[in-house]
Length: 194
Image (cartoon, rainbow, N blue to C red; front, top):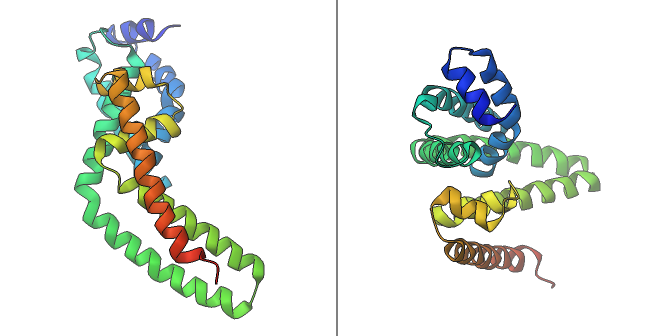
C-alpha cells in the first residue's frame, strides 16, 4: 500500500494504518536522529516524539512533496530543536560520562590489557568524529547527516532542505573540508610520529 493510501485511511479514522507507516520509516528516522544526537537513548526518545508530531500533523500534509520528504523535514527540525534546547544538559551528561570513562581508563590501564587500550583509542576517535560533526554549521551538518547517515542523493537532500542541488553540493564540500581540517588537527596532535 502506498504512503498516500495509508494517509487517506488514517485520515478516515483507521488509526491502525499508522503502525504500518511507522514501521516503514522507523529505521530511517532513527538514523537521522542518531546522526544529530549520537546517543541511542536520545535518538529513541526523539524518534518517538517525531512520530507523535507526524501523527498530529497528518491532517496538514498536502501531498505537494513526497511523504518521506515531509517526514525528513519534521525529523530534522525536531533534531535541531532538541539540540538547541538540550545543549547545556548534554554537556553535563557528557561531562559525567567523561568522569566515568576516566575511572574505566584507570582500571583498564591498571590491568595492562593491550586490547583494552585499542578499544579505548577507538572509542575516543569515534567520539572526536561525532564532536566534529556536531561542530559543523547547522546547514552543513544537516546536509552531511542526510548524505552520510541516510545515503540520500543530492537531489533528495535539496528537496528536503528546500535548496538547489548546487547549494547542497557546496554545503557537502564545505562540511567535508571542515571535518578534514578538524580531524587533521586531531590526528597531528594525537598520532604525530616522534
